[in-house]
Image 1 (tube, rainbow, N blue to C red):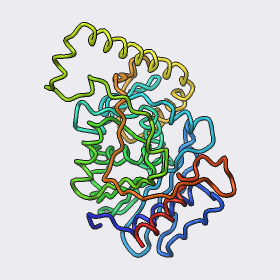
Image 2 (image 1 turned 30 degrees about the vertical axis):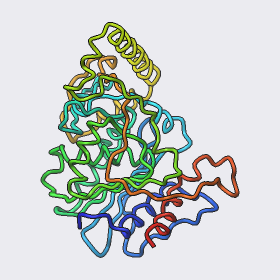
Image 3 (image 1 turned 90 degrees about the horizontal axis):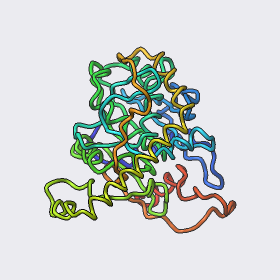
Image 4 (image 1 turned 180 degrees about the vertical axis):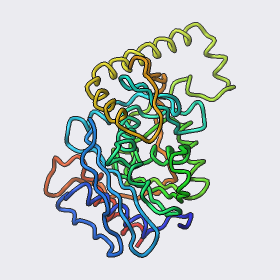
Length: 341
C-alpha cells in the first residue's frame, strides 16, 4: 500500500460506494474492477439505517470497508441533523451503558454527535459490525477505509478509531483512507489530529466536487472560544460586553444540545441495545443521557488531504428537483476520470 493519492484506488472505491448507493440516472453505474468483489454486506443497522460493505481484492491481501451515505429515511436524516459536538475522546453515556472511546489525542478535539453515534453502531454490532468482520481478516492486510457523503464523515471517525483503539492492534493492518463528498465531521483540532495521523503519511484523502453543497455543511460558526491561546483576543474577552455575549451564546448552544438529546431518546434506546450486546470492549454503567458533554463550538471543518474536482455547474437534465445531482457517487466517478484522464 503506497503512501500517495492513487487514481485507480480512488476510482475503484467510489465505484464501490456508488453500487452501495444505488442507481442515480441518467448517470451510468461505475464499472466494478474484475479483481474486486463484495465479501460482506451488512443489513441496515440500528436507529439510523446505517449500512456498510467489505470488499476483497482477489489479486492481493487488500480489503475495503465502504460506508454508505445518507438515504431517504428518517433515521438517516436525523443522524446528519444531530450536528452538535462532543469531545473526541471520553466516555459516551447511552441509556444504561457507558462506552469509552478515543478519536484524537488533542484534548480540544471535538466531533459531530450524530456521526459518532452512527460509528458506534457500525463498529460494535456483535454480528454485522465492522469490528466483528475485521477480526476475521488475515494479519497484515492492507485495508482501505472509504465512504461517500455521511458515510465519508463516519469513515473519517472510523479511521481515527482504528488509529487509537487497541482492539485490532494485533492484526497489524495497514490503512489508507479515501473520503468522498465528506460532510464536516469535527472541529479544527480534530481535523489537525486526523491529518497528523493520515496526511503526514500521505494516506488520507478528501475528494470534493467543487459544485457539491454537502461538503459545506454543517454550517460553521467560529466563536472566540475556538481560538488557540494565548492570542490578542484574550484581552477583548475580558471586556464585560464580550463576556456577556460569550455566555449568551454558550447558553443558547447548551439549550439546543439538550433539545437534540431529548428529542432523539428513541434512537439512543436502540443504540443502547447494540452496545449491550457487543462483546468487543468493556462498557460501564452510564449516568443519565443529559450528562453527555456538548462542547460549546460549531467550528466544523473538513478533514483529509484535499483532492478537488472542478465540477460543471448545472442540474440533473432529467430530474430538475434532484438537489443531490452534483453529490452522487457516480458523478464523483465521472469527474475523477475527467480531472485525471
